[in-house]
Length: 339
Image 1 (cartoon, one colour):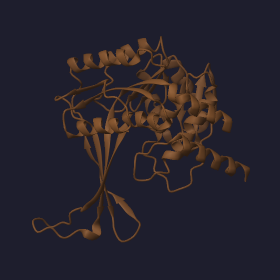
Image 2 (image 1 turned 60 degrees about the horizontal axis):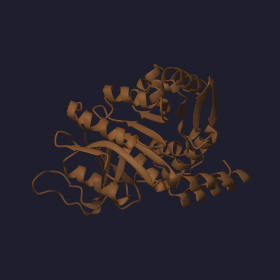
Image 3 (image 1 turned 45 degrees about the vertical axis):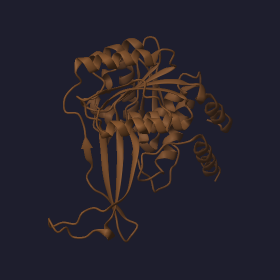
């Protein structure tokens, strides 16, 4: 990807119409200053004095947030929230980035997923993250909610350029019946699917697992996942899912498989400190925003690699990347290669 090519992509993004279906959540960061902690009078422990809290969209909703940050103006998110405080927060975060809630389904039967991350800090610059506090659904969707989601999906896909699917949670939005409909839609429009546990269940979709997810599904050892093995895995996924496949390899880049051929697009260097939270979402947003523009897949993957090269340098948050930040990162990469 050249500098002019990057500008061409960025100029095209506002006109893209992208539907996105799947599991969204709220990421909550609670920062505790342990210098303020005092031994509790009621119990023999020191509480966490929260001095700062931050909220951001996570999982599939983080893909939507990244699309918005890139400049995509027509984003249609199909998902389900509960009627709880986290659901209200979820919708307010959508409002802040001007994504309509028109395609969201809410129900008192459901829990709005959230990942709460307490972070301790003290005298030094060292930060310590306590175990997460997770809110998740423990039962599958009801038939009534499933039907409402299918209706919302049909509306969201009307006139859309592409459909992204984010299958992240065990009892999330992507049911067997919805999988069947997604396969039908994949015969009529580009569909890109990201799934944590069942990437091979998608048909007529470009699939995007990371190397661990791909190895888990194919019964391979992730520790032995060198580039040659991952190319073979990508070919196996292409054959199974009926569309090109890609596998992300972290700091090594991403592998593309199409027509029985594969190639690797290297990642951009990102000096520490780095935070990998949301990197896969950022990549998915970047790739989906460009795929289908008529550009070579190498260009789409190069742009997709650039987006997380920005977001992973934003520590302690689920970050996004703006067009100006992408321009700056690309210029730094050019300088790095020149030296």
